[in-house]
Image 1: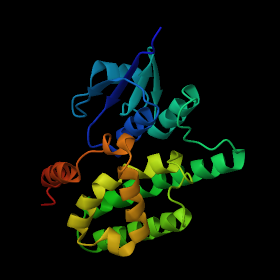
Image 2 (image 1 turned 90 degrees about the vertical axis):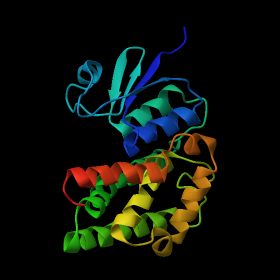
Image 3 (image 1 turned 45 degrees about the horizontal axis):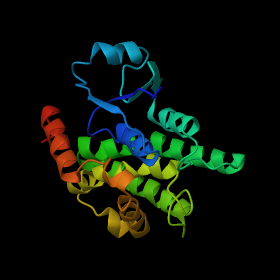
Image 4 (image 1 turned 60 degrees about the horizontal axis):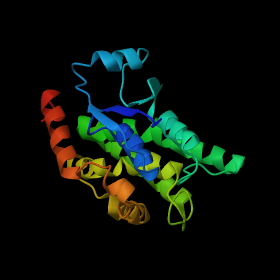
Length: 219
């Protein structure tokens, strides 16, 4: 019997995009269900009663929540194609560490850039660039964080790239000028169908954030 896979998501979410990339890497067909986060569906509330957040992967009726946990689940269940986590336990631990670093740092600091002004925004921008430089150092001369192939950290980080244009526009800076190797890496990732077909258009994301800024009275 074929697997039934449903993804509950919200289109601009970099966390939901991670799951889309992982599913595409594995060549899996799934049903995509767009959520209205201001009017959450009964299914979302039933499947993620603790956090009530997207993304949620529903596999044969069973929910898996939190994007990095979902990506690991996908990698473990469909392990025969395009492995995302290394087989070596130490390398696997390192990949989880850097993906966790992305989760703990980038979302919050990126949020400071688009949702604040003045000194607070400048501080957020400085810390955001420092984070990216640290990640650029971890990438080193490798084509991908996963080595020769796209891996777990690549999936965790690349989905932020479609928010970069908005960060740059609202923060008035250039990520490429600060982190050229990281931008070269994002372009390399975007050459992969699994990534380019899963990420949203940066200008569309910018428009969405512009609407958020107006709603919050920042504009």
